[in-house]
Image 1 (cartoon, one colour):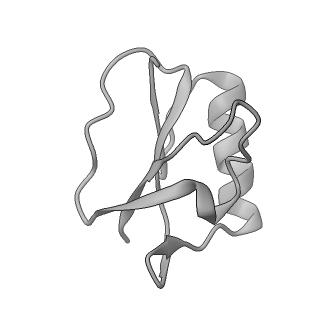
Image 2: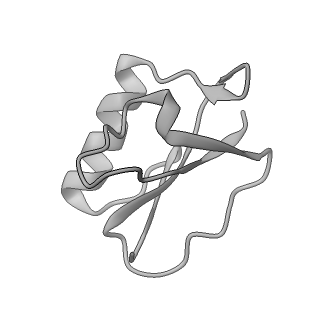
Amino acid sequence: MPWYFYTLTTPLSDPCDPNNYTLYGPTEPPCPGANIYLCAIRALDHMGKPIITAALCAEIIYALQNGIETPNVLLKPI
């Protein structure tokens, strides 16, 4: 599955909205540092945008709320 960078458009951007992501590619992107903000997700692709299922959305929210990366969600310091 490909990786997608989270592209913050506003402070209230929905992390479960596929339009807030940019395709990165098949390898894990660099997201060094403290686990505070959403950096990237791994998801199935639909025309260059991630398919964000209810399970993946829950995984994203869990990672953000707990500051813990998951197999499909990477975090970054800023």
